[in-house]
Amino acid sequence: MPVRILVATTGVLPAAPVAEFCRMLIGENPEVTVMTVVQVPRSFLESLDDTVRRSFLDEDDSDRAAEEKAARYLEERGRRAVDPIRSALAAEGIETDVRFVEGDDPAEAIINTAEQVGAEMVIMGATRRLFTEEAWKSVSARVMVNSRLPVLLVPGTRIEDTQEMPVLEL
Image (cartoon, rainbow, N blue to C red; front, side, top):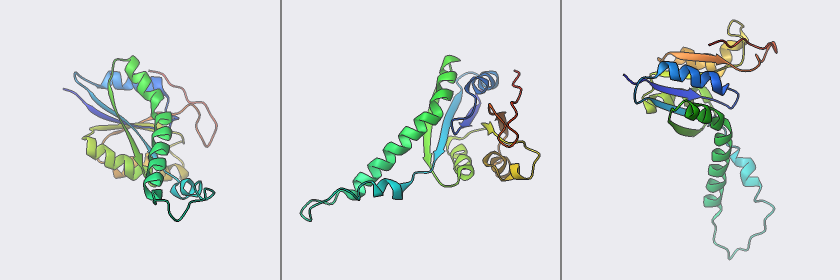
């Protein structure tokens, strides 16, 4: 029976362990979606046009241009975050669907995307120790608390608050 997995990354999730976990968890015809959440700085992108002088006779395409810039920004940042995971999964023979989600609240965006794709499990990174008070404010902890799905946390290459290197053994 296939398992539908959502892999949420910001670009620091170690690709090889994630691909290995997915390979062990999936059945035939797996459905794996790799996603990232990007906060698009719309006001900054719009300010890039402030130096361009326009004639009053020009058609106003500023709204369309602003949306195109935001879409390009989302695509560029999104690709940078998901491509290592996508490549590692492809090396394991696992095809993926890719989603770039614009949002200000990554935990909420991950939970909503998991529901949209019908995920049965979420795999994401843990960059902080889980048993500190500060860690419960992290995106991964908020997804664990607010999602009804199992969440597999894969430690990053460096634990943020202690700078320790985690041991990854599969």
